[in-house]
Length: 139
Image: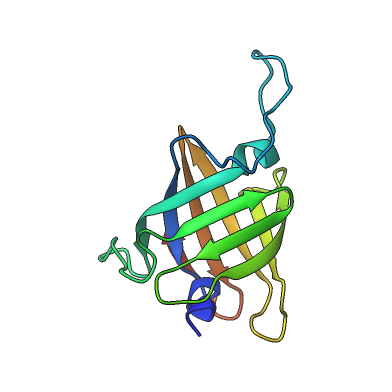
């Protein structure tokens, strides 16, 4: 399954889709308040760069994929693959910052961990293959 390829260490840089996600409630924090990492994840993101190999930053299976974060849930839509649902939990105090993904249907996929970093308006996700300590990057 392609989801296993993602879990096995793919990486990406994703950009938040203009206008965000209409299903995400507006924030009521004061303008000068810094949003938490959890708040920054919320909304719809599009993969603009993806690689399993540093020499090939445009992995066709991941480019254009949509990640939608709502609360503690993630919907991941790749081309030609059924919509995948996950629950996620952040560990913003880890070094590097980490995210744990647990599939809604554990029979279809295994939980995984990735590192994350916000780079301006972009989010870098590096999925770690815990069996091989191999990393793949999505941007």
